[in-house]
Image 1 (tube, rainbow, N blue to C red):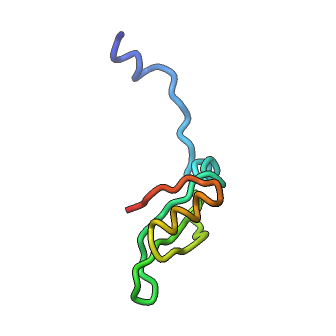
Image 2: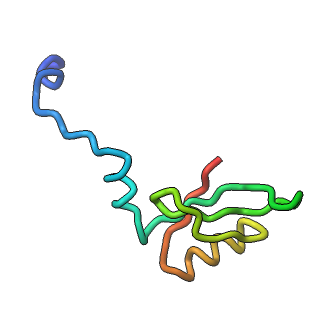
Length: 76
């Protein structure tokens, strides 16, 4: 295989942030540790970046996400 052939070959289009967010809507939820009123919590965000929930800990956040037939993904 010629290494330069890939450099000059067909390229896949690069999706926009909005397009990537639409792919995960309704299927992926992002969990991020936050502090609310001085107490640790876990915020739940949709693929489009909107906050869709809040839980006191990661286990309860993940349970809520699974209950809504979504896949939780941790964001550090």
